[in-house]
Length: 267
Image (tube, rainbow, N blue to C red; front, side, top):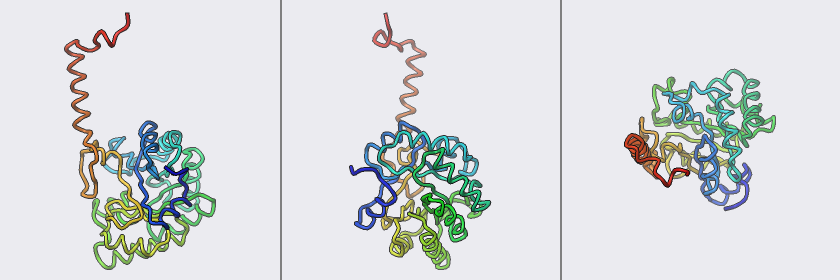
């Protein structure tokens, strides 16, 4: 593994054609493990609301919740770039509100960069935050904080007009100062066009193989989150059934009095 990952290193990786591996994490032990195996970017995502807190969408999670988990992940991380997600209504009111939230994410959350959702309308906000010295990762396509506006977690950019809007937003966010862009649930051909049009890295989630990197939600790729299964998720370890089996065997051992055994007890 190389040394510490920075926004500049990500740019260098993209320039030489090296793909960027990004995963979410929300706790110390998980962040420590994925950092050690070479994940380049750890996103403390507002998906925390769904996979940890049990909400139906990402909207209920608060900035204080995000700061708490981001600081934990940052404390565990030695190599990866830690990106803290700004939650719903922590940045949409005004560029000044967004700057304060982003500043707290860097200062209290100890993040190395901040992510926020939205296209061209977020340009003034991004410029304000970047102008204060805070690196910003953009997020366009399907933006989960706008799930009710979209009417569900639907594919974005499926028409010529939508595709053009996404391409224009991508260029605008790059010009505003974003160091990278997440492209979520858009056609792979459109993702290829966006990636070719930009000089900053693109990170895909449901955007096909032509992006400069990929990101998945940890609980999805480990088979733990079972409420729904997006097409773009590859399950690398189906841990949900294994966990249920382990918990069931523990309950049975306790009920039957076979745990703790002599080897688990002190004289």
